[in-house]
Structure formats: structure tokens, C-alpha cells
Length: 327
Image (tube, rainbow, N blue to C red; front, side, top):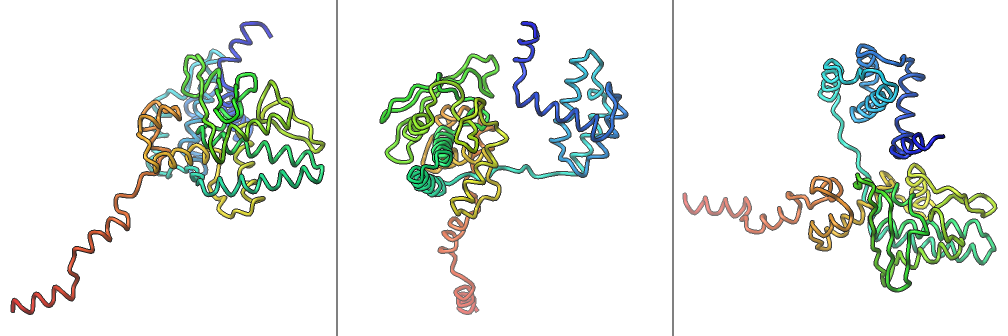
């Protein structure tokens, strides 16, 4: 691979590349479409999948097909007015509510890490290195992901050589790139040491037990207790989190994904009086609309508000007595 090819490859994130590759495969192999495509074939593809795929998923497929045409030097058929109009019609006739991960609660975080602590101690006592490593890794992943509000891909891209941890004080984490960093300038994240549920202590225990001094922080572990050289992928984390729920005996794993950590912290901070600006800066949101997608604001028509209003209402019996007096 030439230097130019390496730079072109690095310009696209791995997750985006995998997603685009899967989308093109779905169009060309699963559906049987031809590339380069025409606007008519794209419209038929959209119509055939309008009922089974969400409009957002179809939009992603279009983006992948468009990028393929750009990369190969062909005109982009997805820009045709007919394609845009059909996609608009699909959104109109097949509306779908956005699915969001359920926020992880601090009580659940406490229960999960408590179970992982006990399981790790039992594994060490039994000489089960694989289980001990897995439990220590999962504990560090949960606590660091929650208290720092990391995205799943950010957790997967953490590298030990870019982390400085001071026990009892905090951590400094440098990420060469993140979702909001369009210029790839990199960003430093500070993580506080806490009196309980401490991410700094959990990180130190994990890398110390695993012997990690450089390379990916969160990795796979094989049956013999050996660490993989590559990091976990963002697609692994949701399944891993749900498995921890099951193993810990917690039943509320529905709608739990890797985003539950980020949403969980955002809702905890909001409920504990963090100002919107401080929360946005800490988590890394650029605009308030992004923040509102994660924060579950109190329902303005909540039971408490209604009940307070009812206390000043005399009720039907009292109103009947008033009416009788007037007669």
C-alpha cells in the first residue's frame, strides 16, 4: 500500500468503512442490484425495503452507495430528484419513533460493579485467570464509560500510552480523534478519582492485572486467559453489557446498549443539578439539541404537578354544597 493509499484509508473511520461495505453488499449481493447503479434501480431498492427497514437505515444505505460511486468516478444516482422524493414519501408513510438506549441507573451500576468485585475475588481464589481478567476489565469499562460519558467507539480506542493515572487523584486521557473532532486535533479528557465506584481505581486494577502498558486498553480475552492484541469493537460492547446484566442477575436489560453508559451519566448529572453548559463541555456535545437527545427531562405533566393542583380544588362534593346554598 502506497503512502497515498494509507492516507486515503485513514481518512475514513473504521466503523464508517464497515457500515458502508455492509450497505453496498446488501444492495449488490442480497438484493441483486448492479453497480454502477441508476436512479430507477435505487428507487426500486428503496421501495422493496420501505416496510422492512427504517428511513434512517435506508438513508445510510444511500450514503454508502453514493460514496461507492464517488470513489469509482461515476455520477451519483442517489442525488436524483426522484430518489429524494421517494425517500421523503417513505418517511411520510412509514414513520418510526427513534429507538433510544435506556439510561443506566447509578443503582444498577452499583449492583453490577458489586457483583463483578465478588466474582473477580472468587475467580482469583479459584485460580481462574480468564474470569478474573474478564471481570476486572468489565468493571473498569463500566465505571470509566459511565463517569466519563464515553461513546462506545471512544472506549474501544483508548490506548494505555495515552493515559496518565494518579491513584486517588485522577486520570488524563488523550484521544487522537473523536466524533466531534473534525480536524483530528485530538482531545484530552480528565477523569476524577471518586470515593466509591471509582473509575481511576478500576482502571489501575485492570491494567495492573492484565499487564497492559501500551496498546488498546479494552481487549478480548481467549479461553486460556491471553489478551488479544486488538481492541474490542463498538459492536461488541452492547452484547457484553447485556451479558453482564444477565450474569449479575439483573432483569432490566431490555434496551440496554453501550449508549446506556453515556445516557446514564447525562441523566444522573442533569438530575443532580449540573448546568447544561458544564454538562455539554464535560461530555463533549457541541449543541443543545445533541444534549437533549440524551437527557430525559422531567415530564411537565407529571403526577406530582397534577396532585399539587388538585389540593386546591374543592372537589365535586364541596361544589354540590355550594350550589345548594346558592339555591
